[in-house]
Amino acid sequence: MAIQTSSFPARYWHARDDQRIQCDLCPRFCRLHPGQQGMCFVRANEDGRLVLTTYGRSSGYCVDPIEKKPLNHFFPGTPVLSFGTAGCNLACKFCQNWDISKSREIDTLADAASPEQIARAAKALGCRSVAYTYNDPVIFLEYAVDVAKACRQLDIKSVAVTAGYICPEPAVEFFAHMDAANVDLKAFNEDFYFKLTGAHLQPILDTLVYIKKQTSVWLELTTLLIPGENDSDAELEAMTRWVVSELGADVPMHFTAFHPDWKMRDHPPTPPATLRRAREIARNNGVRYAYTGNVHDREGGSTYCHNCGELLIGRDWYELLDWRLDANACCSACGSRCAGHFAARPGDWGSRRMPVRLRDFA
Image (cartoon, rainbow, N blue to C red):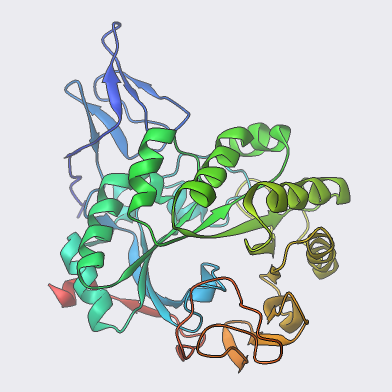
């Protein structure tokens, strides 16, 4: 049986003189005739007003390790209740979650929950945070913000996993309700963004600078390295230097391995050596916390003191093996503070992935 869409009043749009309305949420500025959906699939012109068609609907809920987002400096070892909806405002040819983000079928949204229900479920499941992920939460801003408000009432943190393709005004509202964000910095050249994602680089850079300099959101970055597309030494040098210069040396960077998917099945997987090279370039350019991902690399997944080089948090995939931070998140060897948000003791969730049904928490 098909799931009925919701029609929740959306924000950030205006009427045009040509009988269309314009969505002002992201830099695509979709101009919609009555009955038309935006490129993201979930925002639509309904009788001359913009609505969000997926409010309260999800493609599924799962308790994950926070390191899977990936966030290595935001309460390590803790569980996070993760969910997404459908659609996306980018058109990445290399999408690794294409079955959700590229979905144009409302039946993808197989579960439903109110914001309060999600917050209660996270609390009951012992989750430190809720992650808006799988597809980009920017496109379901109204739902994400309401969930974040409900979570904050129960002392549950909110984590955005996003490409950061959002206009300045809605960015202020969205990130005011987030506690942490992992932003996909997909490349550091405009040609890549335009040809392979259908978007532009500068709005993402503007979002990153805004998050870092004007909010209290904990920020980490992820770059999926695709052989021959965004993995050259020159591009990695430019990207990591920009991060240190504009965002600061304490912003962690995750370099993750591509696997052939969606419309780029003709590209080979990323060699582990490419990830190690990217990590080395980042560290040489002053990035204090650089990681490899989507490969088995204990060294590349672990956290080291930026001052003395001591191992602070040893990781094997999503399992924490070592913890050498004191109660103030300082290195037990030299006393230098590790940037991030840490509890006095690490979590012990490990690498478990636990699907849940939100109807059980009605």
